[in-house]
Image 1 (tube, rainbow, N blue to C red):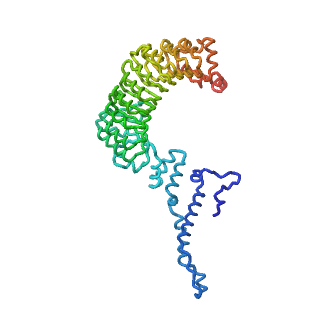
Image 2: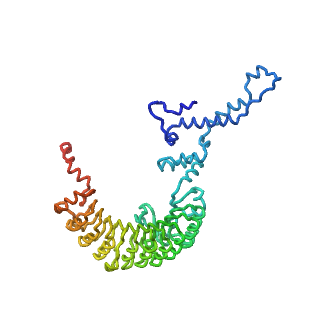
Image 3: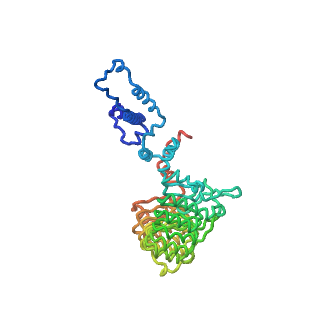
Length: 499
């Protein structure tokens, strides 16, 4: 078969240059390559015929009769050609390159069903894994199946399900990652013991030296130390049921960039992260860039230590925090902080200090509040004072944000982006009272704020809105698509056919 057979039948249609297309769509090309390799191997294995001596006489009948070796070759080639696994001639490196080029994950996962060899090769390509069976880890089967993991989630594997344990089916958010509604969580009595979790971490660290991300629950400082010693490349760490003692082992992670601490989760487990733990964290993780505190206690001293020691910190998030009164003054020590986020907090700071003690975050660019309860006007004012140099403000489904609280946002003179969603107590007058003070504003989004009316704005505010680069306006509950359809009159044109 010549090389021209590889090309398409239609000369006007160019041949596909993607090797994955040749592998998946053109089976004839693959057969041609495999058969050519088989023939070359068979020809190379065949010995050259013996040359007869000059004085020997060869009978004419012997010339016409084929030799036994030639017959063996002719019969041997069809036998090899009908082999079931033609890809066995390809090396593991070539087959791994082909499998890695497959576009869809579902298609890559189905390749595991082809053969045991493909199963092992596909396991080499997996980089992230969520463990549901703890025995799969400690037995060593996890390493044999997936030898190149760099992201491992052990949260669900450390949950123990028994007949006497009542499980709870929920949709619960933990920090910036979610536990889906079809998964089970248990109380702290249904977790694996600390010594078993530490042993699992020791096994994990011994076989995955290139580990970069780890999610774990109910471990001790000794378990963390075993991971830090064997896995120096760890950059992201999520600790559930964390406490001050666990944070004693955090200093060994010299390259840690992202850290999420979950202390208290109502209805599940209750752990204490105080100023002592935050100070230990600050002294150990000086290269930290992103920090998320969920259900953590603490106060001014802990936040101050983080700001003074973690000079590279850029993103700080609080979720359902239990901070002491006056902690907000410690934020001014985070001189390089760029993003500040509050999620599901029952309050910001119940008793903030006066303006002279609050300070300002000079590099802060983004302030995000989502599902927070804003009860005290003075607390909101203190927050805007600390974040007065911010350029982006987002309020999403925050309860209690009224005109009086929102008025203090006029301290943020450098605002360029403002998003208001689900702020039902904010009125047209409250928005109009401060919007004209934002001289650098470029984008404004108002979504599902039922007390903000279109017809109540003054001409000056309307002209200000028209000059914005981006303006998204859906203050009521009516979807934007429905409003545009009503304006186009599409619903009236077919009325005579559906009376």
